[in-house]
Length: 178
Image (tube, rainbow, N blue to C red; front, side, top):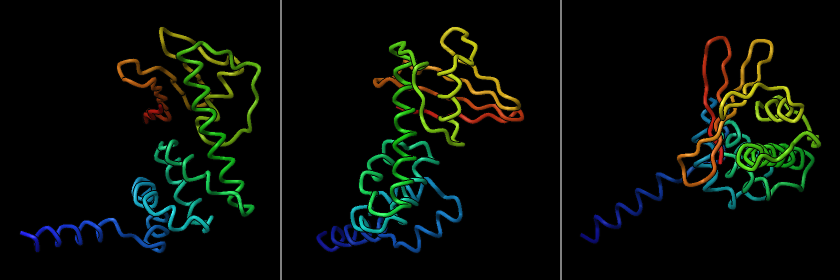
């Protein structure tokens, strides 16, 4: 029984073991969820490697895991690329928090201006802050040239969550944040 228990512990520790090169390969292959999850386990081990930290944090952003991304970005700031990526992650995290306040607390965002990026959260925030939306029930609909964004609350959850649905060329994607 003891041998079986030890074998399981050794096997499970190897299954979580991952190298920097594996993380880089997974990132190149756009396997962002795995990079965020497995790279996040090792981020303190590589806390002085801001390229590694950036890759993991940006993978978390791409997989809608901003809470993990912000945690990792707190270690970034010693290099130019680390500071830039940490600011990018912090800006998206702030936008997420402000959109949650907008939805649940009716916070006025029109007096706020934040750095713009190509990330859809930035585009949603910019249009919400400029009152460039149509409100239907609990949904805030933003129609741009060939993309529609729908911001709405998800009230049936313990935490205040929001969902952004993106409709682009009849393809839908949904992104949930809390």
